Length: 292
Image 1: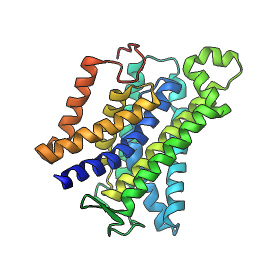
Image 2 (image 1 turned 180 degrees about the vertical axis):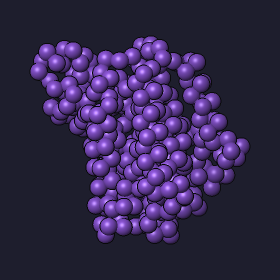
Image 3 (image 1 turned 120 degrees about the vertical axis):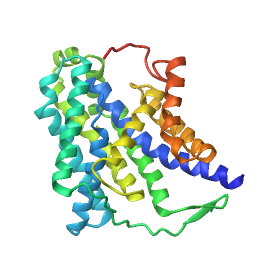
Image 4 (image 1 turned 90 degrees about the vertical axis):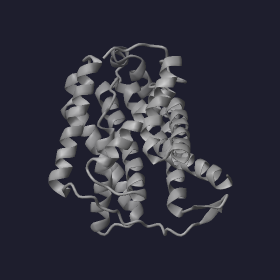
């Protein structure tokens, strides 16, 4: 019983941290540009390959992680400049289709460059436990994932809430038209939002790949489940993205312990439906309606 509770706690904290990082990326992009980015999972996978390239080039793990995050952020900003800038003002449905197209392009590029085979990332963390909780081991990689979540989410939240850049982002989120009249460069803010979103997703992607493996497809399923966590918390709420991530991680871990591993994704979407039936906007979301 104690081991099960410890497994539940550890699984919730670690997976919840990853979901929260990705979820905050979803929310920042949606609030700033109105785009629901279904290419987040592709950015997760891409970041693992970028990290691998950086490590193979001789960089230590920390600079390699930073390089993967920065490169993913630049690719995200470039996606806005080349494609989504032309779709400003479009309805949500074509924007969603465009993000699915972007996901397909990134997946094909990864297939062409690195192939479809599964790879393992060189981990800087030894697998022996640092300590135990209720008899369950906690490794350095587990601690790293949690610390990464706290640092990444804390830094982005501070930037959005406490800086002039964040003020501009919130202004654009409220009204891009009025922001333009106030001489705020809406396109620059939107490109920044794309870069931040992709960078956050990259941080989670590298952490996920270090814990498992990388290939062009698998991480995309994790990114899609993270979107369910965002909907649970509220698509336009930062605290909702964090709360939804930990709720979903708790439900999935409990389902694995009680029902078995095959129920993990099923229970994620059951939890999502339960929330949407009772509170369609999510726990902390605004009560607005958008039709696809």
